[in-house]
Every structure is written in C-alpha cells, then in structure tokens.
Image 1 (cartoon, helix red, strand yellow):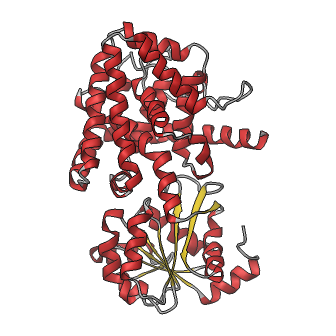
Image 2 (cartoon, one colour; image 1 turned 180 degrees about the vertical axis):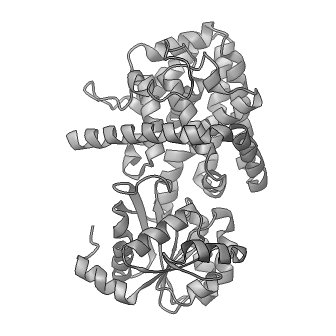
Image 3 (cartoon, helix red, strand yellow; image 1 turned 30 degrees about the horizontal axis):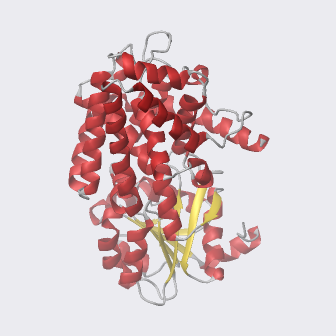
Amino acid sequence: MAIGTSEEIKQFQQTTTVGIIGLGVMGLMYAERFSAAGWHVVGCDRDENYEQFKTKYGDKFEVVKNGHYVSRVSDYIIYSVEAANIDRIVSEYGPSTKVGSIVGGQTSCKYPEIAAFEKHLPKDVEIISVHSLHGPNVDPTGQPLVIIQHRASDKSLKLVESIMSCLHSKHVHLSYQEHDKITADTQAVTHAAFLSMGLAWCSCNQYPWETPKWTGGLENAKINISLRIYSNKYHVYAGLAITNPSAHSQILQYSRSCEELFTLMIQGRKEELTERVMSAKKNVFGHLGKDHQLLLDDDLLQQYSLNNYPPGKRQPNSQLSLLAIVDSWSSLGIVPYDHIICSTPLFRIFLGVTEYLFCTPHLLEECLQVAISNNNFRKDDLNFVMASREWAFIVSYGDFKLYKTRFEKVQRYFEHMFPEATKVGNQMIKTILKRVKDREEKN
C-alpha cells in the first residue's frame, strides 16, 4: 500500500493536525496511537467530559472543549460517534471545518455517515472515511482497515494512509456502498444469532456455564462469543443493524430461518429438515475441497470453558442457532468466504464455528437426529426462536431506544461474568487468530 516513506510521513507530521471528535473506546484508541506515532492530535468528547478527559489524557494529546475547536484547526478530522447521532453531530460541527481539510468517520455503517457529510460539510472539504474492522481491545496489526476515498484527491488519500500506517493494519479500499454490503453480509446474521442466544438464556434465567448440558467445545465458543458481544456498548451492534439497509433483510431472514427450521424439528419432518440443511451446506461450504483444513476443533475449544467442572463428553445438541446461520446465508445467496479480506476477528470465529459443525464428519447428522428425536433442548430452542424474532422486530422498526433497553437488560444479567469471559475469550481469539495466520501463510 502506498503510504509513503518514513521521511515523507515525518514531513506530513510537521504540518498536519489530526482531529478526533468523540473519545469513546475507538476514538481514544486512534487518538493515543496517532499521538504516540508523532502526529499532533486534537480531540474532544461531550462538553461535560472536558475537564475529566483533559486531566486524564492531556499529557498524551490535546483535549479541547468541543468539535468546533477540533474542526477549525485540524487537517484530517475523524468523527468517532454513534451512527444514530452522526447527522446531528456533523450538522453542529461541520460548518466550522477548516477550509481545504479532509473529513471522515469510523462508524460501522457508511450510508448515513456519507449522507451527513454531503449534507452539512462545506464543498471545499474532502471526504475520506475509515473503518477498523475490529474492537478497541484487539491489536490492529494485520487487521483489515477499510478506507473510503469518497470525495478527495489522491494526494489527500496518501496523507490519510500515512496517518493510518501506525496501526499496521491491512488497507482495503472500497466505496461506501461496497463497505455496507460487505459488513452486512459478514456481521448482520451472526450478530443476530449471538444476541439471540444471550436474550434466550436471560429470558429463561439460565447461566449456561452453570448447566451441564452446555458442555463441549462448540458450547464454549457460543457462550464466549455471546458474552463478548454483550460486554460491549449497545450502539456497536445497533448502528450496523438499524442504519445499514442491507442488514434489515438479513436479520429478518435469520429470524425466519430459526422459526422454519424449528417448525420442521417439532413436527418430526426429518427428510425435509435434512434436505434443507444439506442444501444450505452445499451452497455455503460446497466449494471447499477435501484438503480444506478446518479452523476449529473440539479439542481446541474445550480449553476455553467458563464452568468449573472438568471437561466432559460433548452433549448432543440440535444447534438450531448455528443451523439457522448457514440456512440464512444460503437463502440470501451469501458465501462468507468471498468477504474474508474484510472480516473482523469475531467473524472469522463465527465462520470457524459453523464450518466445524457442517464439515466435521457425522457431527451435522448427529445434530439433525437430536433435533428430531431429543426433547432436551426444545424449551431452549423455543426461547431462542422467540429471541430472534424479538431482535428482528426491533430492527425492522428502527427503534434505537428499545434496542438499547433490551440489550442492556441482558448485559446487566451477565455483567458479573464479563471480566472472566473477556480473559478467556481473549485467549481463545488469540489462539484462533494465530491459526488463521498460519493457515493463510501455508496457503
């Protein structure tokens, strides 16, 4: 990627101020890393946070009262705010933007972000947006970083790439339309699945790590991923689900897949269920050759349990949540491997979990048999179907307030486990990402 030599970057740094509007976890990560790399950084958060942030971070970068002070002096300004608030905040601070500067954002959905920039920014301002496809606690080295050159010269693009080079990420150049379609394809269905798991467990007052039937590597992965999602801020997922038009139909399809597969299960229609699931397997995984190396296995995932009893025999499970992910991809014509270059660390694990279920000999057939003949998970599956329907309903109405209420209720239910889950989850992710890297290098 053309980011210039170290001498060119030093020349840019002598004349460039980087502004960050919004010092949440990602905004802070950017501000601290840019400043440590030698850039002059000016940042702000809400007015009421000024004194607190100035005291805490003032020795690392310049903290100012609000976005007007950032906008009038910065050569590249990044809006690091919630997608639901992007239009209001850009309308407030956009008119103060320095003449000839570059503006971007790092929301997970670019359609409302670009619309806000086009609507509220002066015409002499260029637009280059970014999106780091990982959370703030993940090392950005080698992770995808989308750069969107929407309204800007190649010279300005080179400046933005130079600023971003200190993250050591893989730069991926897309249009905002391509970005939104890919992020929906890789995240909407899988987020819906693991959000629904958490809501279902909460609704039936169940901590899965305390229940013997939730044992085995797959269960460990599902529990860790669900808790990791609920340990974050609600807007990380609400923004993608509600503001991204491509996500709506996918989340609705996931709810529909859950309900239709569950109906086949409880009606004992084994042939139809098997035919549908095997068709989905062919559509999503049929291109994988016999020599394809699975990312995950039960022995690996057994290591990352939150329960205190010794690892035991894996409990047979219908795995409705995972069957519905692949059924949704199949119904939507999505082949997730097509977007692996823009995948988040969590998505690679989502993909690895479903790949393991569908491509491990005899495991999928075992799940289908359990789904038809074993009633042990019927109540859990029913709660899961209801949870997936509730999330689809909330997203279809675009209700951020209800999304937040429901998300934070589940979050409070599980929050006592977040420290341990984060520790175990980080270990799991580190191990799996090393496997990903090793496999990519081998191929």
